[in-house]
Length: 508
Image 1 (cartoon, rainbow, N blue to C red):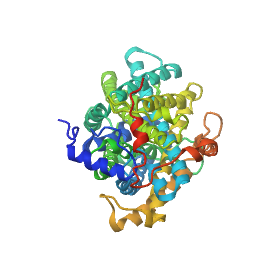
Image 2: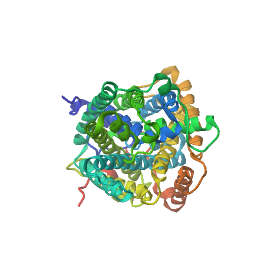
Image 3: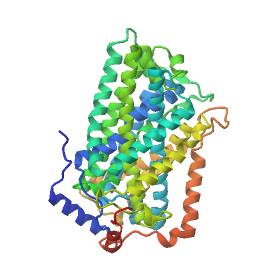
Image 4: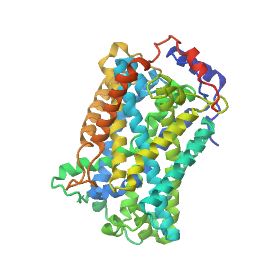
């Protein structure tokens, strides 16, 4: 049984009244309950996607010790970020989420740049998730039918996955909510099955001192401290996407509480599940060098193969792939709502097209299609460069992570403008908020640094370039059109009612 799919009528009325107080006319359909809202963030974080996809990166940048202890550290700090963001989300439960919060607290420019950073991060995350799923699918096809996972094959699989996710999202938020609810149980069951199988079946396991103390540096850098910091990318990339609960708040009942709790609970449960998964997989490594250089192109697949044999490896890979598909589907929902909201406020080129909502499904269909199209473009360099996938993951982190901290920072800087929602941190809001802001500033600088040495076309870290490009594009579009077209409603104005009612026309 999947709870909270059908909300009570009075919940919808209260939530819509709150949305009108924030200046927006309700056009999306509220069919997502508290569990569904938690499920979408939990699905986007997806430890079976992030941990498994970047496991090979972790083997090189610090090895087991950095993967396990880095997960503990990053998870703790992300709990601070998530709690700070949840408090602001409760006050401003809209699809625009981060940029709307920044706009209301700091002004139009803050909202504008936060929106572009958030959008870059969401689209980069989607590209990274679905390309990772394509890589794992390629590994499964290699084991099953001997298909060589060339860049062209992986790209074709990636495009098919994107089209599947677009189709599923076009059916409406009710199907998205059901799939996300199933995804939660699939992730918990999947982690349990994988860890149990790897604990019971192999005749040999690595020692605890290896799993929690083995340091490996194959980056080319001589500084161990530098490598440890770079190795945090595995955990930091996985702990992204929990703003999905905020982006789906206009389709959630009791959004002031449900969206805030959804963020915190998603981070907390992912923290626990990810640690168990990483430990279980690392204990089962049979051949470290062979795992790094796996013919499948996916190190976890080699661990499964060495530990369980061909049949067991294929079954575990299938568990991971299905979890990744759930993850990508949830991310399309979150990113498309960001596109819809940003267009609703006139921030994107051709905004009138992307903000349209179908009255039949209550879905911003054109925003969904634009989302998957841009994700495809972001991942296309993977056809030509081995480092492109790493670049996409770095782009996701460098875009979305600063965007999380900006509303928290503005809530601290302009205390007089902030009106607490139903879910708040009380007197702990300030120390938790500043801890979150400092951590985000640290990782933002960290992930602009080069990851391997020597630096060449394949090893170059494209995150700073992406950051400069998106800020440059945002500045250019602000000067050309944004200054005049971008606007958010004044609190309690209801000024958007007439315009947004016109947006609900069916797409033809």
